[in-house]
Length: 378
Image 1 (cartoon, helix red, strand yellow):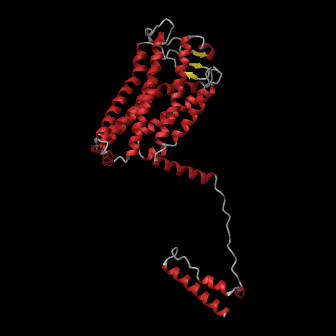
Image 2 (cartoon, helix red, strand yellow):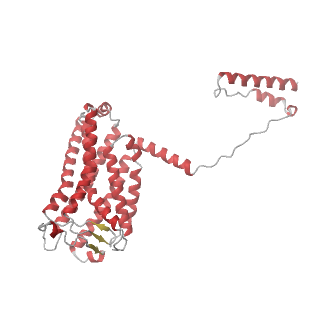
Image 3 (tube, helix red, strand yellow):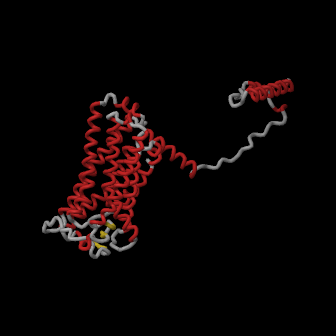
């Protein structure tokens, strides 16, 4: 029996914790990390809403949201691989000392290329999904809306190959970056300081370790899901269907499928698809947790987070301070004893908070008062 309640809780929590990293990396102008946070947070929210909103239900509701959510979840695999590719490319350039030679024009071109790869390419990937989208979407009990892809040769080209090719390129950059780390492990601190990026040795190792772990964690899952979608379509083993024409594939496009867990568990294909569905949706909140563990526990980010928590505490939990008029000045000096005067004479007046002129005036007033009091006492 499947339950998606843990996925809902972890998805919302993971989306929350990764947003805590935004101020630190926005200040550092690390666009690949910011794009990764964007896609992780958005995908986590969609998965959390899906699994919470369709608990034990296959009701057709929130159609505009469903159209949005299925595309975000569909593109998240490709988008996160693109972000990993961008981050590894930047780390490899730093480790290879190519980063120091970048001019202002080259940095601007790199910024545009990162925006294109991390944001525009996933948007194009979403737009091309309509080619293989057989009908509007499917609603699976406990999992919510899912995009339906018509299995054909075009679905291999436009849906399966882009994330797989991106992951292969990212793995290549990871190998190159690891090679530079081995060759320059003793000079890594000097290389980073000369790069002018402001990245410390600890940050570099954390970013590299996170990206490699994300690749080795998500790539096998993505490959498994893609192969499951291609090879597990029917009991007869039919893999691909002929893409006869646009009208043939999109006939009855307004149809919305509804599938309960009980119906899916009645067939071997349904049981396999449920396992893949569960694993694929659980991978996003786990990726959010890994992202925060690697990047949110560094000294720089921890310091920023402590500052934010302290600010929120003072805003929402501050205790009002009551004003005090201070002790009343004694009117009669005859009630004082000689011991009290001798004790008061030994008290120093803190003069560091005043300038020389005001400090001198205060010292004169105190000395005059002491002389008068001593004269009256005698």
